[in-house]
Every structure is written in C-alpha cells, then in structure tokens.
Image 1 (cartoon, helix red, strand yellow):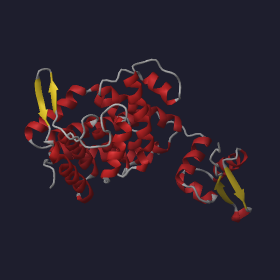
Image 2: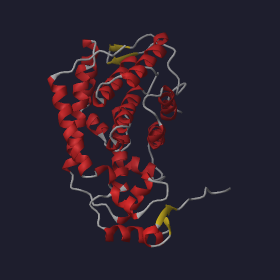
Image 3: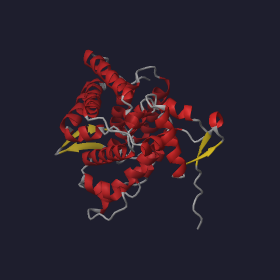
Length: 324
C-alpha cells in the first residue's frame, strides 16, 4: 500500500529548486572534490545526526575519534560516534531497497547501545515529551508487516526519489521499528536512497541543518502524525535539502590537486585504463596535465605503466593484505 501524502505546490517548487542545484553541483564536479573536503562533510553529517539524539561530543572530538585519537567524554557518546563512523563507512555497500541491509546497518549503529540491535522490537513503544505521549507507535506484532510494505513501496514506486526518500524517513519514524535508533536510521536511510541516485548526498551534511532546526523537525513529524500523512514532513525535509545544497554551492570552489584527481579516478576504476579514459572523467583537462598526473602517479607507485606511445596502459597498484 502506498503511504499517504499529497504533492503540494511547495513540494513541486522545492523539487524544481533542488533539481537545478543538483545540476549545478554536477557541473562543478563537487562530488569529485578533495578527500579532505569529503571527510569534513562526513564529520559534520555524523556530528549533526548524533547531536539531534543528545550526543554531547563536539565536531573536534568526532574528528579526533575518526583519526584514532584519544577523547575524553561520556562512554555512551563515544560509542555512538564510533558506531556511526563504522556504518557510514559501510554505506556504499548497502542497498536501500533491501530490508536485510536496513537491519544490518541498525546492528552496527546500535551495538552496545540498545538491546537486540538489528532486530525489530517485540514490545510497544511511545514517544513522551514532558508528561505527554506525543506518538504511540503501532503494536509490535504489526512492525514486520509494515516494514515489508514500506520496502515494497520503495522497490515499486515510480515517484521521484527526492519524495520517496522523505516518505521512507517519515514512515520509519512513525512505525518506530526498533526500541532505539529510529531517528538515526530514518536519516541514514534517506541519505542512502538519495546517494544511490545522486552521489553528492553521500557527503552532503543536511543532518547539520536538521540539528539546528530541531524544533521544526519534530514539529513536522508531529504535524504529519496528526494529519495522517507525510506531506508536511516532505515539505520540511525538501526545504532542508534545498538549503543544504545552497550552502554547498555558496562555498568557493575547492581546487582538486593532482593527487585528488588520481585518487578519485582510482576510486571509480580498478581496471586497466588509458590516458583517454582518464581524461573522459576530467573533461576540461589538457593532454599535458593528464600526462603529468599519470607520470607522477607512476613514480609514486599508485599505478603501473605498460606499453609505449598509443599502446600505453595504466593499472592500479594492487595492495596485498598484511599477514600476521
């Protein structure tokens, strides 16, 4: 069954605005920018998502943990960060339409933080704000069927992915399939759904904007609950995505270094390639620059060169796993 929602003029306006910004992102090759920039955005994503859940660690502390440095802070908060780092690292290996991936991600995200991570809840739950129950989740025995229906919707819908990602996020919050970690999973899975179509979303830290507008986030969830459909929440999340893309485009263009270009190309291609293949990824590059990139990468033992002249080929250096 299709989850209930309406397509409003605001939703259409936001989808149009986001589509234009995604085109600008692609034109500027932002998703190809330096690993340092991508690492920074990943840190902001993890910090923003966990801050919404009350994690007290700063961005600097999250950075230190990612760099395997010692951090002094609450054990639970440190564990949350380390779990999030692990699950975001695995993100490209998950499939958004696979329920097994969803459960596997929750297990990594919540191990050591919740009972039976990676398993749907077996008891009733409600969300309490102050002395009031603001949301009573569906009975536990309904959860497996509701989640199966939600994944079927994700597999079969012909709706725009910008909208389906918001719907899945809201429905996960509404169903509340786990005892804990539902908000984190809703945001994580929306990121995965989007990045499967638009790679830039792997590093777009829209959770940071959610964390700065938490009151609006929870108001949008409550509004959708009361209306019995996710329309208001879709409008809120598309606004967040639109603003996050705007912030990204407002940044001064980072300059890709020679090392950045080679590293990015090798992340896309693990097979033998030519200079022409390399230049097809960086379409504005001159032949001289491409030759210099590849020559230096050979000297740095990142790639191996075989053949000469028009038969020259390059291959990534295979790194053997360390033996104990």
